[in-house]
Amino acid sequence: MANKDLKIYRAARMCPVCGEDSRVYDSREQSDGTIRRIRCCSVCGVRFSTEESFVGMVRMRRLSRSSQ
Image (cartoon, rainbow, N blue to C red; front, side, top):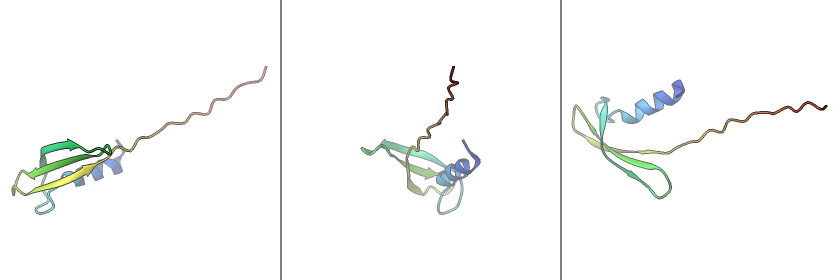
């Protein structure tokens, strides 16, 4: 996981009220492939939802063929 992606992941887990870490209360997969999670703050108890989607990466390789 890249450093930028790790920062975004951590920001999604933070409570919007107090800024502390939260835990997943409920998780459901939507029909379009995204995951909707209801989170609960471990400090102030506020519940909020996040939506996560998978962004796939394709690695391309160039093959060189030597002519014989």
